[in-house]
Each structure stands twice: as structure tokens, then as C-alpha cells.
Image 1 (cartoon, helix red, strand yellow):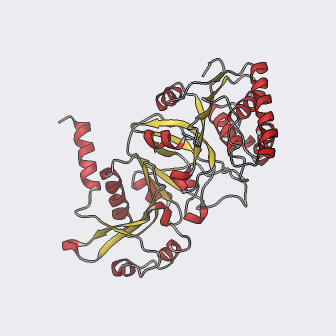
Image 2 (image 1 turned 30 degrees about the vertical axis):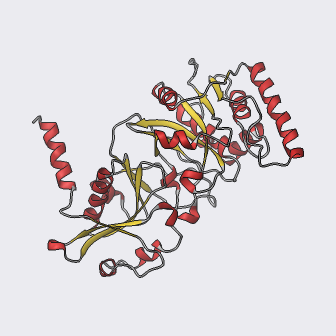
Image 3 (image 1 turned 120 degrees about the vertical axis):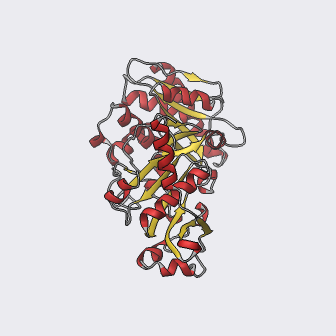
Length: 370
């Protein structure tokens, strides 16, 4: 066996505890006796501060010799239809708990493990093979979650970390994804990613209050004339209007037709064919950014249209930036940042409404056409 493969095999063997115990986390019930014996009372107490039930909370524990009392445990959650696990906290023998979670994730064929930085130190995270996430740029008063977070990838791929910025309103997701994409491409400096930029771009792109694909693509071109932009929308009718009464739909539809006229005038192509996941992967391979319209029904449980940024890829999953996190479910920026979503799940999420249309805006680097 080649030395590198032998080293990788030894590392995996060292990570795999003799035995792993996985039990559901019951927020309304008494914690397992073994968990109470581990101490660190303030940590399990935090586990009950929000209702995490939508994100499949469970405890990954390491029993002692002969299956005796637990020596380590971690609270683990994840958004549905994704390819990662998140450690909220680890207690007891923390290195053993983290190794158990990594082994648990490998056993499920997942792409990534994250670790919230409530109690994890940079030194402990590094020793467990995790790297620090860039701190979020979200303005004070709008950020939820820990000050730090860490990630460990279990699959190789093409992933460059952008800054994380959480939208500060319920309706500026499209503007934020475009700003983050331009920051990642180098067209916008990190220091310019702020609330003024968020609201300014939204004001230019909005269909009141949402950003539909054509209006968003045209606004991106106006803001960055040298950035190649292509709009993908496989329907000719106005979109994201079905929930409005007829009199509210009429003027918004007029604005969308105006956006199409603006696209023609400014030279932004609109592709009317369906955009497959393979094309998104190809765009990522060319270092392009894809703003993708999805429904939050799968990941969050409510069918609301929402913009995310597709910017990375690993085997079996596309890596997105989600500018919104559901704090009421224990969801934080650590979940939303560098989030791997399996291709079939993302395909389902991005098939919008009863008409099953897909909307996206692809942004290339200067001198290229998406």
C-alpha cells in the first residue's frame, strides 16, 4: 500500500471510536442519565433554548470501556435535504466526541461537518482537523449565532470561501446573494458589503418586495457593467405573483415586462431553456457565480421563494451561500455558510411553484460570458 493511502487509512482508524451511540435529542424530556453525568451543565441548558426539532437533533455519544457510562457526547443537527452535520456543542472528552461525529458523518456519506464556536476553541478545532470559518460581515444587531465557527470537509472539491453576510430584511436575499457573488469574484471589496449596498441594490432590482430573475439580472449589470450576466428563466409569464390579488399582480407584471425591455437594451441575454444542475456545475467549474431561486420548503419547512448563491462543488453536492438563517430553529450563520446541498435536493428546491419554472442569474468574471 502506498505511504499516502496507508496514512489516510491510519487516520480514519484513529478517528473511529470503538463504539458510537446515536440517540434522538428529546427537548421536552429528561436528558439521558449518561449525559447528566458528563457535567458542563450550562452547555446542555443552551440546547433547550430553541426548538431544534425541524433539524433532526440527535446526540452522538462515546461510551466508556465495555459500554459503560458515556465519556463524551455532542449535540448534532442539520438542515433537511443537505449534506452536512453541525456540532452545536461537544462535552466530556471533546476530541473523542468530535471524532465520533466525523465518523458518524462519514458513515452517512456526508460532505462536511461544522462546529459552532460556542465553547470550541480554535486550538481544539484545529487539533480535530477543522479550519475556522470567516467571521460574518452582517451588521451588529442583525447577526444570530456564535461569534466563531469551524468546518471540516470530508470530500475534495472546488470550494472558495466567500465572506458571509446575512440579509438584514425579509426581502433582500436577491441583492445580498449578488453582492456576495461580486465580493467572491473580486469585483466588490469586502468592506463595501454593508447594509447600504444591500438596500441600494435591492431598490434597483425589486419587484416590490421580491427580486425576480430578470429585474435582478438587469440590476447586476447596471451596478457592474463589466461583469457578464446571463438570466435563466424558463417561462415567459411574470413570476412570483400568484399569491397577490389580481389588482396587485397587474402593476407588478408591468414592471417585469419593463425589466425584460431593459435586458434587451442593456444586452443581458435571457435564456428560456431549463437550467439543469449539470450546467450549474459547469458554471462553477468556470469560476462563475450562479444566483439561484429556490423554495425554502425542503430546508426550512415553509414554501417561500428565496435566493441563494451557488459557488462551489464537491462530489454529489453543490455548495451554496444562504443569506438567511432560521434562528427560531437553532439555525445560524454556521449552517447557512458553505452549505453543501445534494444535486437532486437542489434540483427539487429550485423547481418553483405549480408551473415548475426555474430562475437563475449567472455572473461571469470580466472578459467571459456565462
